[in-house]
Length: 212
Image 1 (tube, helix red, strand yellow):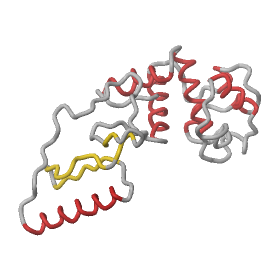
Image 2 (image 1 turned 90 degrees about the horizontal axis):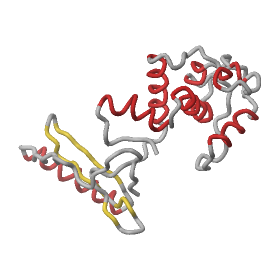
Image 3 (image 1 turned 135 degrees about the vertical axis):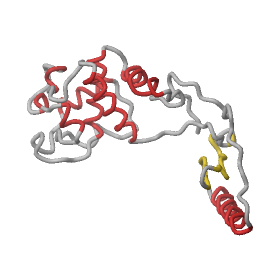
Image 4 (image 1 turned 60 degrees about the vertical axis):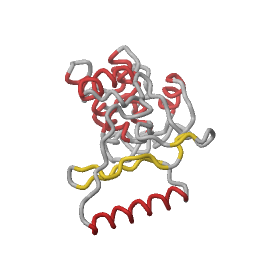
């Protein structure tokens, strides 16, 4: 299903769609025919996505397969927005590092700097430990698709049992990155999405990506 990204302009077609160039030579043409046949077969089996194939500098395939909106049988397009999953963590980390450059926070800051009521030992966890998944926080705060307000998330964070003493081990934590996003909001005094867009996306002209 297509999504509209907050603060982004999502096109239904590319402004300047690349021209497919057919490779010369019967061997390459045969390979391209086989690839297209495979893609068509995968599409008939349920493939929904965008395929971009290059041969050197030439784009030989760049098109959508399947549907972007199954309910309305709306076909996939090359400009359809996709959920990029946990890549948001790398972008969250980049936002934190940018705020450090701007003097809004330090990686050595503890959670208690931003939330004096945070219980021990969580209050002693540093931003660096959150970034490195060494905080001891659990993997999740609940179901992965459960919508929580910031206040609800903080309540669960502050009552969560840590899996280990902060800094002593490493364990992947979605919860830790939720806390980082809240810290970004507190340090920047504006919504996380706006801070990420202003500090990470706009400076490098990533106008077609955003955080919902």
